[in-house]
Length: 199
Image (cartoon, rainbow, N blue to C red):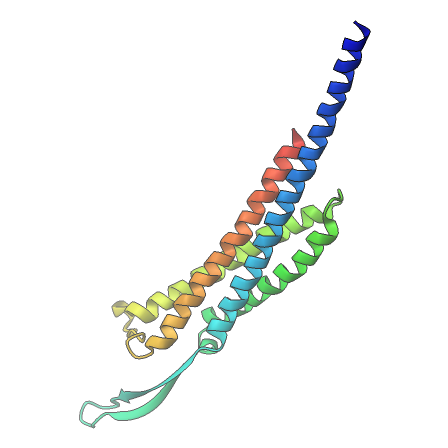
């Protein structure tokens, strides 16, 4: 009878050890997933900023000043800093890229500790989601204007002339959107972690 109670006592001690090992393994898995998402967010936002930042296209455009005169051929250049929405897009992606690198270092320093730094990182991740979604919306609106034009205000489409520039802008927007989703998944991961800890 005594040996049975000792066996039961030792078995319950093993359950506690198994639970601790499970928590440690779960923390490692979450930490690895978080690091991968931060590296992915860094790469995507950096690539988006560079793709649009170096994009430039010069074309010869016919301009007709008066209907009675023949059109004049002039060189016209499309650059990202000619449109404020694209300036906002490049700057926002550069900020998100720098933050992703900085937060990766902070998350390594904060791993395994229970400090308020984790909450600050979550709030900054959420801020990056908002920043990236807003710059993506602004760049997409201008991109659609360039692609389709707007007949109500007599804005002609320009993507039929500057096709390569428009394609680079579209690729940059897609990359930035994927980067913002990586930051959003980081926020979801942190929220799930807080939910698990509160139980």
